[in-house]
Amino acid sequence: MATILDIGILQSFDFIFPVLLVFSIVFAVLQKTKVIGDSIGINSTIAIAASFMVLLSETLVKIINFIVPWFTVAIIFFILVILMFQVFGAKETDVAKALSDKSLQWLLIGVAIVILTAGFGTVLGQQLTEASFQAGTAVVGEINGTTTSGVSTPNFQQNIYATLFNTKVLGLIILFGVAIFAVALLTGSSK
Image: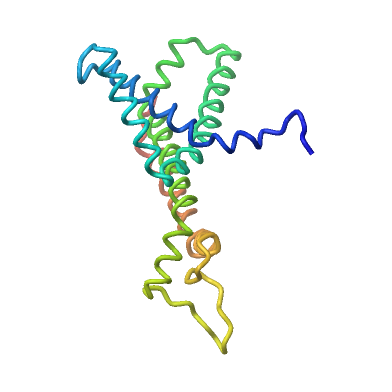
């Protein structure tokens, strides 16, 4: 049944959005950096070529389609945080000063790396896991004829959950968190 909010038809055009995004980013970078020159024609030709090359890789289209919504949510979140601080009295100079802080820049880079890693894992994880089992490099554990659960299964998602929610890994994450905060608080400048 068709509804007003039915956007299923857009899935037929899911290859167009990565092409437009790549064109926009490449063209903007070429225009801003002037690596090749000021010519809009040359820059747009290179951007069109790069954006059409994206169509050659279905994997790249899937990765872009996965990461763009997450980057959008992250950007909207950071904009809303900035607006919230401005509502409570922060000036534009305070925001610019905070954005030039190295720790915030590393936080943004960390968020970007997590999104990119999740994108590659979602798109390529199951494919690479199945390839490793077909090549005979991975072994599924069996006890009395039944397959054991763990990180040596042909299911990528089950392997990720088994790894991340292992008690040793969770303990290590907590230990790293405590160490990061201890180092940050102990080495921070005293004002």
